[in-house]
Length: 212
Ligand code: ADP
Ligand code: ZN
Image: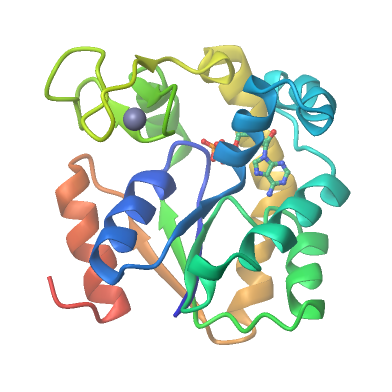
């Protein structure tokens, strides 16, 4: 199964992608996590991406399409994958089509903008493995320590309130048109993101026809 998760920044795509990945045994492919990794490692691509990311802008289609193409060619992606954060522009969606990728389902997690802003302040991510948490809605067992790998959990620089607003604008302008793009193919499903992660997961599994 090849799945796309759509939704505003902070809607919970990453968290739900982790849950689906654990359930179906197919990898979560997060372009955001891959880009942050490149920034952390100071690669040439990371240097190019950093300024755009810090200001809440999108990284160029060329860079992102390149890393995505390489990633889905890895052996663990052979039986399907969950795309989290890609495509984010119509050009990226068209690039997927051109690669011959067949998408089975596009799942939109819808959360109103007002809620997004409140949520972002509590988001924490693991520095080592990229797992995401929320201080209130999805806390780690031990304060500041990742449940998955024992790494340190931190707040992302682009989760600052000013940057969150511009990321939401970018989403409305560049990514929201993808809803129409996939609506036309009959593959779009929408669930409303709930405050409780487990509640959202139930809705997500139900809409994908996965046994809980
Ligand atoms: P979010 O929580 O906003 O969904 P991500 O972790 O998916 O965040 O992405 C963080 C940043 O990485 C984005 O704001 C953007 O700068 C960059 N990025 C991630 N995926 C893409 C993409 N498909 N196209 C362009 N830029 C991307
Ligand atoms: Zn971790």
